[in-house]
Length: 250
Image (cartoon, rainbow, N blue to C red; front, side, top):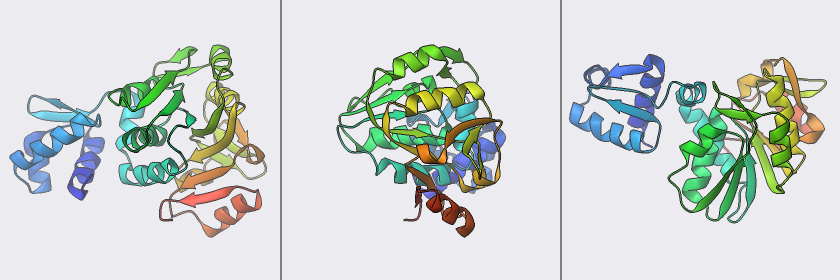
């Protein structure tokens, strides 16, 4: 994705929906050039074309968040994808950065099985035939398009994954990682129980936030994939807890 296309995503994320004419004027490019970029972005599932306008791909929460800080999230996803080998079975939990990871894996790996509780992710990568996607059942949370609960746990136990990739909403220094939804927290722990390694994908600003529910203690996590803005203090804390810290600039 080129710099202009990234700027287009940023503007669409801010506006939710914007006319093609206004978008072209804001960017200082012709509508012909813009439409070519929009065709690429729509084909990749990032935006939706309308008559005379363009919007985020859908109104659900994940699609909207995916475009916010897109470049940073894509760098994190690309670094995380380097941890996946051809032929692996991996689990990917719900979230915007996790969705981008699934896309990067689908674009660059072969014979990978992606086990996910996210209907958004399964739809986001539905066009790729070089990978296999397994969707876990469970109780459906429509806003995030994700499955949670005891049925999800039973489904997760049927797989042995080389890694689980998940997001977080915050961190507590004397425990570990937190999220804002206790059902999501429980589901992540259930998925983590069947994975050889657990990696967290998150922007470094989340380390200064605190979610409402305990998700994973430090000792349950193999590594963190985050952006290069992570503070030296937080990086040292995580490494002291035994976690591998991977940044998007390494």
